[in-house]
Structure formats: C-alpha cells, structure tokens
Image (tube, rainbow, N blue to C red; front, side, top):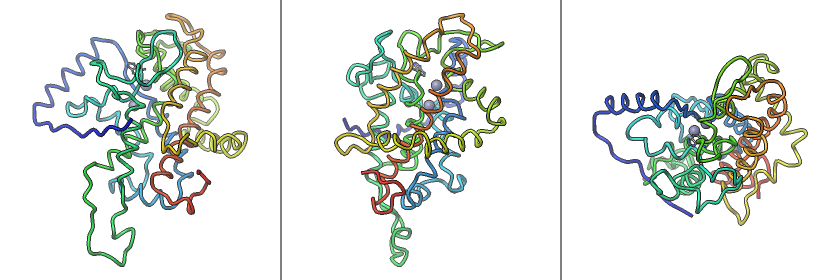
Length: 322
Ligand code: ADE
Ligand code: ZN
Ligand code: ZN
C-alpha cells in the first residue's frame, strides 16, 4: 500500500494550541512517549556502523548541518515535534492499537487513526516514508563533483523529514507495546510499581527497562550498552541478522512483519504478570531485558538494511543484503 502524505500548511496561534494540548495531556494523566530517547538513540547508533559508504553519504547529504553527520542526534525529532499544531496529524503514526487480547495484528483492520483514516499508524508511516525516499537522488555536486552545474534535484517531498521519520518509526515499531491493546493504549493506562516507583507499563518499556539496564550493567552509559549489543549482533545473533533485514518480494521495508512480532512479544512478555497495581522488580526486569536488547538490535539492523536498500548500490554494501 503506497500513500503519499504531505506536510499541512499552518498559519495560526501555535502557543494557544500548545497550551491546550499540554492541558489535555495533564488532565488525561496518560503518558504518551515513544521508545524513550535512549531507545531511539540506541536504534540509530546500532544502525550507523552497518551503513554502506554510499548510504552514509546520502544520509549525510540529507541531514541538517547542525546534526554534524549524526543520524542518531536527530532520531527523536518526530517525538519533539508531534505536540506542535502543524505536526499533530503525526501523533498516531508512532503506534498501532490492536484488538484487546487478540495478540495479532492485521494491517487493514488495525492501521488507522482515531477517525478511521486508513494507513495512519506506524506501519503505514514506514511504508509511506520508505516510498517517498525511493525518489532520492544525490545532488549533482556530491554525486559527480566535476559536474557542478545544478545543485538540487527538485523533489516534491522533504526527504530530510522522511529520513528522520523513517529512522524514528523503525525504532518505535520494535517497542512491543507500540503495537499493543486498544483499551489500555499500549499499556499507557496500566499503572504498576517499578521497584520503588510508580509508572505506567508503557513507560517501563519505553524507558525504565533500558534505564535500569544501563545503570546496573553498563556503567550508566548508553554507548557502553550499544557497544555490548553490537558485539552480540556480530556474535551470538550473527546467523540471524540477514533474515532480520530481509523482506519478502524484494520489499525495501516490511513493517507488517515487525508489527506482528511486536504484538506477539507484548502478549508474551510485556503484558504478562503486569496487571494494574502489580509490583515489577528483578524477576520481571531480568526476564524481559533480553527481549528489549534483541528488539533494539533488530530495529538497528533493519534500519540499516532499509537505508542501504534505499541509498546504496549492492556492490558497495558492507553486508550483502539482497
Ligand atoms: N497511544 C495509544 N496507543 C498507543 C500505543 N500502543 N503506543 C503509544 N501510544 C499510544
Ligand atoms: Zn515515537
Ligand atoms: Zn512509547
């Protein structure tokens, strides 16, 4: 399914709208983060060393200068802007709500926003931004520096935004509770104790599992945690990475596969033994951390494969992805 969205034009009282949104959020008591910032940074940091040289060049040509060539530095951008009026339409693109307790995902049934607009969910968004990025052509001065006549290929889409959305949503779709049940908004309305604090279950999967792991096992450093996961990608998971990255029928990305895995893991690990009011501590943490690390690894590897398929000739890929 291919759809092409465009940014909507906005000219109005943004501050007032922002105040209304913040007030509504405070009233609802529902936290609406995505994989927290660490989850997104980890996904993009894991992808970066797996990018082919041509991919890195293309991605860097699309990044703003202040990113200093680092995709990871802007991987949380879609979360930063989703509160703004002109970007409000992107909020449902961070997740999928599936029927309660079914533990299965179906694109046609589940991929819509609250108004029933189809394709408005995280897998629809990955399809859309993947498709937009197939129109990428390297600017002439980078592709062929001896032909400096034209600087830009006019493109209907904003491919910088498309790249940042794609990198972010590939992260989100790997957070199991971003493909969760409808009535609890992916665990957002399930209040539990995490060691001595109270959070909702969704937040525990967005942030606290990674945070606790970082503090306990990785010297409080995300980059130490990412390096440990990279070692596992090149070690105990090395035989699986190719199949993680592959898509059937020459697909560039295959978000339905990632979403189906997520709801299955949500049922098996995230929701299990996490009823409202329960106390989650070492038993839950230690049994779920391997799932979180593997999902971060799959997100990073798949993001790299997708970007390489979009931007690199096979001959120059670091890993053979066809
Ligand atoms: N809001 C509603 N459902 C959600 C989900 N599964 N993840 C994040 N936010 C949501
Ligand atoms: Zn998000
Ligand atoms: Zn989230």
